[in-house]
Length: 368
Image (cartoon, rainbow, N blue to C red; front, top):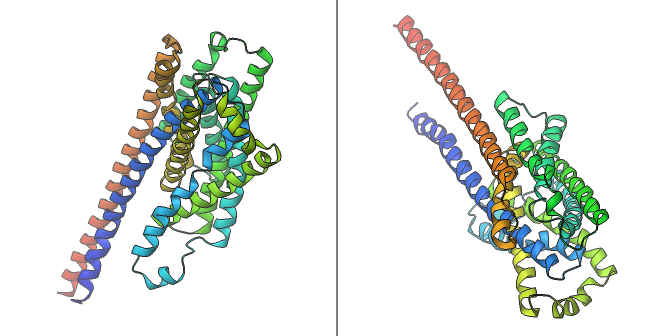
């Protein structure tokens, strides 16, 4: 009996430590997603505004920074003291690996649709991506992973979607000078397609992870992200080779509006920022859910507007201020709903423990 007590103590501590680790990972991935989602589109738009024309290059840049993931994967492998883990470096099941590869291909297509839209739309109008993405994510989360919706989460989806749609409803004055209405509409359609593909992709990855039965650890998250980014990069590399985009980079750099040196700075910066966005987005998905990831993404949409005003002198009007307020309100609603649910769950667990203690005391009295 004395040997059982330390085990019980450890079991009590493990969930507590797990919750703290999970909270830390969620906050870290939110930070990475915020940095990447704000910086990546700004640099991508800068590329197109100053003479960049290679849409597949823009799509390729989203995931091509994936080799940086080898560093944390290698460190984790060599610092892991588990013999089984050292002897078998593959932490993904066949199902999860293949699913991640398929999702990576979907991400590659999403990146192209997004880069096509970004080449014709100003940053402020790219908010349509997030507004549509949240709606698509909510739909696919309900259909594929059977996401449970509370009135708090429904309220958040409606408010944040409506807030971002407001930005798109008043976009007539945002059409760039010298751009045809046809290209603008085409960019709009491709942006919506990117939103649909992204919403389906992240939900499909959540479903694959759940079905695999593999617990989400740091190792698993890094390996999944590596596989997804690898196949997304391969998907975009093939048409780049066919179109000889790599050979044309030096010529495009020489004609870049900001100068040749800044061309490479912008492209490299976009690669790094977008890879950080992917790491944060996929990490957040694996640590929480596709719906929560969509909500955080939508929350960052108005933040993009602020930076678009700073870097591109895009107007910040009453509609954008209202969209920011609605997105903040919606996200706060979701957080409050999660807080209420955690309190309810804690109370339920406490009640179960109290009943167990009462039954134990009663049983001891009967034996006495």
